[in-house]
Length: 155
Length: 157
Image (cartoon, rainbow over all chains, first blue to last red; front, side, top):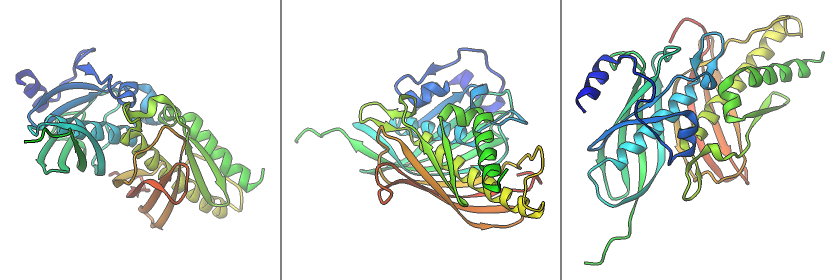
């Protein structure tokens, strides 16, 4: 996480091919979303700037929905990265997004999600998206996910 | 051109010109002042291939864009009335910008076509408050709802 931490704090432009494409999630993969890193209950994703995701042709700003999809994916990834064992699958229960400023055209969008509580059935997550450093958030998210656990062994 | 045609052309023009709407493959139909949005199923919209289920982000984006299109259509109606019943040549709608949106996911979205409608609960000078619903086979079985505020004036978010 060391050079990642540098990027988290500085938000510098990154070279092509950073991270791993989320091939297991077809929609995320189609958007070009990449997994940058995971920690315990944390995930960092990146959505490369792409002409096909533009929502405002006059400015080149990405569609708000693209940021929504990035934050949703990032939150779900953070749930899987939590220290809770045996999570089979998750599904978004609710998701609130606050849009603070447009994503800067031409810049990749980063998102960092933190899963701060997992109960038997529900995981609570918050997330932040930015293009020019975390101190200038593009959007924040707050979400609850339903957690499906793998069948437990009988004691 | 009829007022009906002018506003439908406006929606068609926006759908064709906005890359992200094309990426999702969205289609908008207007009946009176109500827009029904359609997100035809395609494998690219899947988030969980095992179920399979639509990606919550795709559904969310669909709801958000449906709200924007309904607001744009309503504003065009207002502008048309102000201009004496026709849309001015080269009419460029102000695109509403989301301020905040809350999505509730009620059912897993299947690998089927999805529909959505938005109700503008209040439209003021600067902000529109909108509620949006999405469903698949049955209108009564919603797969997701959302409510949010959209900024109308260009005063900056």
